[in-house]
Image 1 (cartoon, rainbow, N blue to C red):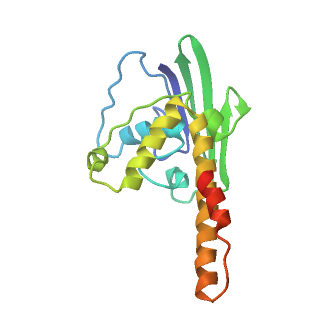
Image 2 (cartoon, rainbow, N blue to C red):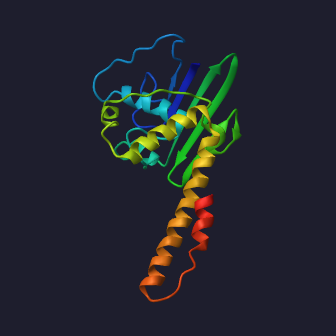
Image 3 (cartoon, rainbow, N blue to C red):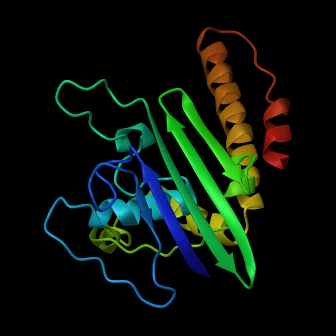
Length: 199
């Protein structure tokens, strides 16, 4: 896999060479070394690529936190754009992400797609210092990490996971309803719980 281009507009502090235009970077196909002082955008560049790969930031749970700060006397930034061109076994894919406070729009080769249609075209392996604690973190954190790993290789996993989470949320709501009914001296038919357990 070769990332041919990374474009970023109004994303954190990423800018072009003059500082006035959006970043439009063409990485070398074999090896790239990002250097610079603190706060110049090295981590932001990696974050932009990670978001295009996973639709998640490794630094913040809210993608809108990645919008650039407006300069003095300038209106607030309300949207950011990320795009990349990826070459995989001779096939080129163009990925685009438009990020706004009201949501995000995903493009694959210029056509709107869902998250499951977007994830998996750019595969990235990210290792940050906080990953060292993964073995000692909560089991839920390890499951989320494994889920993100699966998304890269099997995009359908994202759809499957959302369906499982929906069934689990309905089952838990039913259990809570049953507990409340029993606490109030009412009856509760637990047969429906068995249906959710079979799912």
